[in-house]
Length: 144
Length: 156
Image: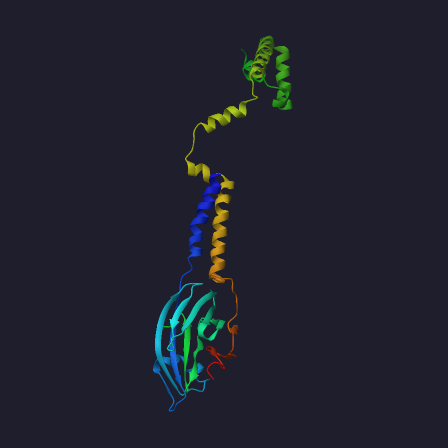
């Protein structure tokens, strides 16, 4: 009986370490995209240039930036320029990948996206109006 | 006591198997012609006849049925420290190590595998989009996905 109790004690010491999964640092940036020339990319968005080059927008500006410690399974809301909200949740994380849940209630859209830890998500969050749209970039473990 | 008696008298109590054949023959030869040694042998045989049964009788009188219990009782009376007794038992160590190893294995598995509040395992590049009234477009690039909301019937 004493041995079983001691074993349970050891297990009880180990379990909190399992349960207390650390928060993931996530950088969320809100980008303003404009189709009006001339082409210009905010220098702060240089790391996103390969992804942004796939889109038909000429100007890119960073209008907001958040550094969020995200806990597994907990929603984090980010306010958007049109007054709506972007809801983010870290669904899971493995050795190489992270899966995010991205929700846009205003657009009745919900997505789960899995990226490797050196990638980032560029997600349109506000529809284009007069040639201007807004995007969010989501990057886990951002470089300092 | 002659020189031969000094030599052979100590051999009187020996058994046949204790002596080499030549020495046994020599001893018997001396014994056959020496009255003193014959008397000594008679005394020895008489002594053995008295002492042997007496010793066996004493030994048989002793009750050994609870000998083991008495020994264990004496051993148990000197209690060792708890940790000494604990780790002297293999079963106890196994009982301690089993959950500890299980916890370590669980930690290792979770450290290498998936963590998080929900069971969701996916590969990089997996995208699942649910949208009402839109037709989202996903562009996969080496730096990650780009998601476009698509047409919005309410705003177009």
